Length: 298
Image (tube, rainbow, N blue to C red; front, side, top):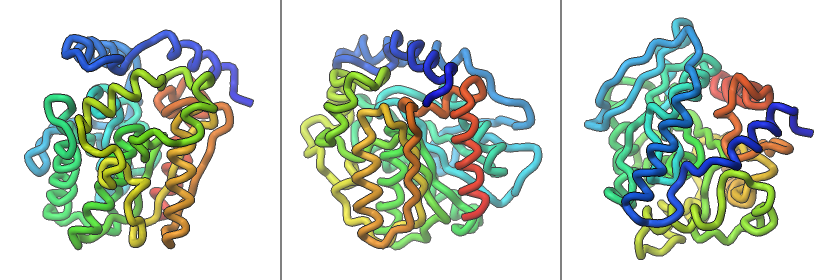
C-alpha cells in the first residue's frame, strides 16, 4: 500500500493542470507557467554543483556531484508532454539522480512543440549524444534517461543511435515512459479514474501538438512499434495507477521478445513520475536509489 505521503502527493497533484488541455497558444503558455511555478517549490539537494552549457549546440544544465565517477555521464531528457518543461523544472530530480548514480547529469533543453514538432526534440537529443561521444566519453560509461515524454525520447534516441550505427550507451533508464502515442493501451481506460495527472484531453492535446497530422504509430515517435532488437539494457519504472502502465508493460514485453535485457519495475500505488516527490515521499527516494544501483552496476 502506498505511504500516507504518497497518497497526499497524489491528491495534491490532482488539483493542478501543468499540461495543455487544448492547442491554443495561450493555453500552452499557461501550462508552461504552471509547470514552472510547481517545480520552483522543489529544492535541489546539497552536494551537487550546477552549471549551464551548450552541448552539440543544444543548451542545457549540468548536475555534477561532489563525489562520484567523473567519467560516468547521463544524458537526461525531461518530461512535459513534448510541449512543457525545461532543465529548470527538473533540477531537483536531476540532482538527486546525479547523487544516486554518482554521475554527471546533463539535462538537455530540447526544442518543444508546437513551435518545434516531431522530430525536432529527437534531433536535439541525437546531437547532444553525438557531442558527448566526441568529447571522449566512453559509450560504456554513458547513459540515456528520461521521464514521461522524455522516456519516449530516451527510447527513440537509442533506436536512432542504433540505426545510425553509432556506439550505443551502457544502458537506458525510462521513468513512466510514453511508448504508444496512438494511445491503444488497456490502462488508458482501466486506470483513467486512478491517474490524477494524465487525463484524456491532455494526452490528446500533447500528441496533436507534437505530431500534427503524422501517424501516431511512427516508430521514432511511438517506440512500441519499432524493431527493438539490438538495444542496450533498459530499466523501466512505472506506477500501478498510471494510464501509461500498458505503455511500459507492452514495451518491456516486446523488447524482451527481441532479446533486449529489460528490467520492469511496477510500483504499487504510485502515480506518474512519482520520483519527482523526493525527498518528501519515501517511495520516490527509494525509486531514485534503485536507478542509482542500476546505473552503477551497468
